[in-house]
Image (cartoon, rainbow, N blue to C red; front, side, top):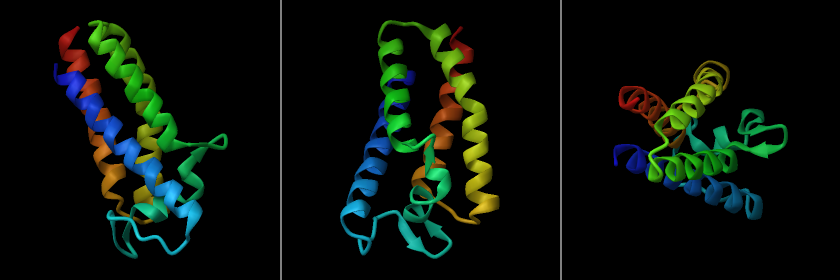
Length: 128
């Protein structure tokens, strides 16, 4: 049940990220709720070169990841959840590093997603 809740939280954060990216594509003047200043901006993170991998939005990839995690948890496939979350860990660490040390930014949504990813890894490992 905990993994389902975490995946739904991650899914919600990803949907919000997709929404922000969509609004930014329509108007560069859009100010997201998660923009608190020059050094605390999810818009800056989403629109940076680190916001996409191979031309695919991280938000969309996250959306797909959390759908898979939710589906697997629904069918009690904890081993697969653990393997998927372990495979996603290097990307999570890379994005975290890029956000804080290359962009020198704080993104509340991104940080929440990193925490959710870590918690999914931990709780899936403990459930094996």
